[in-house]
Amino acid sequence: MKSGLTAALALLALLSLAPASGAATVDELERRLDLVTTELQQLKNEATVAEPQYVSIYGSGPAASRIYQLGRGLSVGGYGEAKYTHYTDDQGTAKDRADLVRLILYTGYKFSDKIVLNTELEFEHAKIEGGEEGGEVAVEFAQLDFLLQQKINLRAGLMLVPVGITNEQHEPTQFHGNDRPLVERQVIPATWRELGVGAFGTLADGIDYKLYLVTGLDATGFNATGIRGGRQEGSKATAEDWGVVARLDFQPLLGLDLGASVYLGNSGQGSEFSGQHPDVFTQLYEAHLQARHSGLEVKGLATLLRIDETGLLNGVPSQAMAGYGELAYDLLAWLAPRSGQYLAPFVRVEKIDYQGSSEDVELYVAGLSYKPHPQVVLKADYRKFDLQAKADAPGEINLGLGFIF
Figure 1 (cartoon, rainbow, N blue to C red):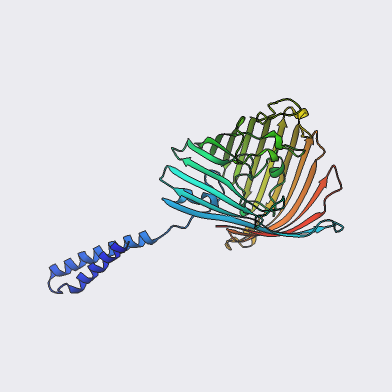
Figure 2 (tube, helix red, strand yellow):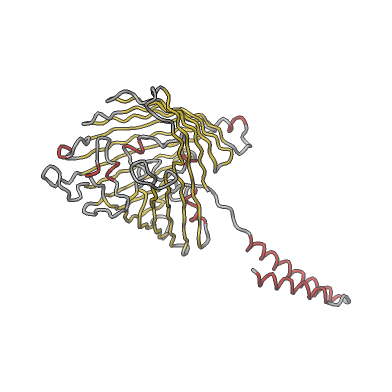
C-alpha cells in the first residue's frame, strides 16, 4: 500500500511539472489524471476492511463464525457473561451471588479458502483456584475444517457435539435468561465437546447435516441426573469406546427452523462395574423447533436419554424424558421497528422426568431481554424450581449482561 501511495504522489508531481500548452498536452494531462484516480481508488479499496456480519455459519454461534467471513489470516472474537443472583424465600440458607460467569476468546486462522482453524478458549468465574467453586480455563473447541464443496466438508479436532439448540449456539445473545435451559445442561450435557472427526454440509436448499465420530462418554462419571459427568472433553480421553452423532436441520420457511439429532455409543470404556465390564450402551435423541415472525419467537425441544445396564451402576437412571417450551415477543419490532434495538419479555417452562431416580424437576422462568445493540444484551429473569425429591429450592431473581464481539 505504501508503494502504491508513492506512485500516486509521483504521478501528481508529474502533473504539476507538465507544460500547459497544446491539445496534445491536455490529452496527456487527462490520461495521467485518470491513472491517478484509478490508483487512488485501488488504495482506498485496499484500506477498506469489511465489517463482519454476526450470523451463524455452519451452525456455529455468530461470533464464532467470524473466521468464515475472512479472506485470509487471523480472526479474533469472543463473548462474555456476568450475573447477580438474589434468592427469595430462602430463610437465610442461600447467599446472594455476583459472578463473572465466563469470558471467551475465539481465535481462528484461515490458511486458504479450503482450510480453516477455529478455536474457543474459555475462562470461567474470573480466576483459577482449587475446589469445586474455583474457576476454570478450558479449550471449548479446536477444530480444523476442510471446506471441499457445499454438500460435503470435513472437520477434525475437539468439536462441539451437534445435539440440541444450545450446545453450538451458546453465546449470550442467542438465548433468553441468564442461565441456559436446564434441559440442555442436565439431560443434554451442554457445553458438550469431544475429540473426533466428521462431515457436514448442505444437501439441498434449507437442509443441512452433520455426521461425527467422537470419543465416547465415560460411565464412571454418570450419576442420578444422567450423563453430564461422563463428558471427557478432550482431556486425556479414554478411547476404548466411541460415539456416533447424526444431525439434520431443515428450514422449510424463512424464520422456521426444524431439527433433530441422535447420539449412540457405548460408555463402559473397559471399566469395571460391580465386578463386570459392561458396554453401557447410551442413546440420546432430541428434536427441536425455532420460529420467528414479526417479533414473535417460539422455541421448543424434546429429548430422550436411555442408558443400558444401569443395574451395575450406582444410582444412575435407565431413562430420562425431558423438554421445554419458550415464548417471547420483541416489543420494539412493533413499537419502534427502525430503532435497531430489541426488547423481549419471555417465559419458559422446563420438565425433566427420570426413570430409576428421584431427581425429577420442573422449572419456570420468566424475564426480559434488552439489546441496545445487536451484540450487547441486558437480562433480568425470575426462576422457580419444583423438585420432586426434596423441599423446593428458593426462587431466584437474576440480573445480568452479555456481549459478543
